[in-house]
Image (cartoon, rainbow, N blue to C red; front, side, top):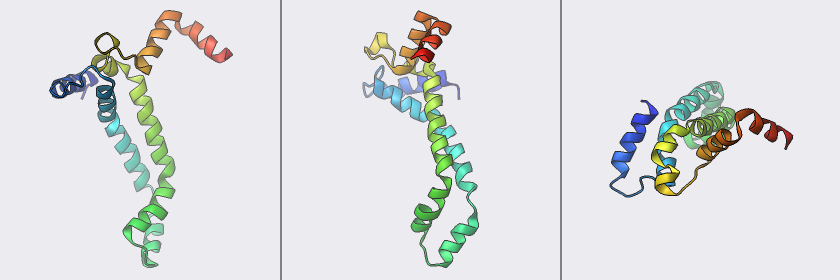
Length: 135
């Protein structure tokens, strides 16, 4: 689903509760927007765990929760961390959705992706990059 359509549906559904053009609406939308990416990467990481380790733990008397906490999650932590980083990056980069739902003009909030875009437009891309590299 395109981000603008998702933002429109969120505006229509959250308008009843009065949190439209608020930072909470941006957080909800970013979470909904990045959820498919998070689930896909997490699922792939969890499926990549060797089932032999889990079966060995079960044969030694470990329950399902113990197998999950002691075997599966420690073996898949890199994929889960990668999913969180990728989700954050996707939510941060796609600031068009954030601008639709929680823009400064309507809410008074200045969110980080919009602030970075405003700085890039104000100072120019190359000059801003040189300043960051010098710092």
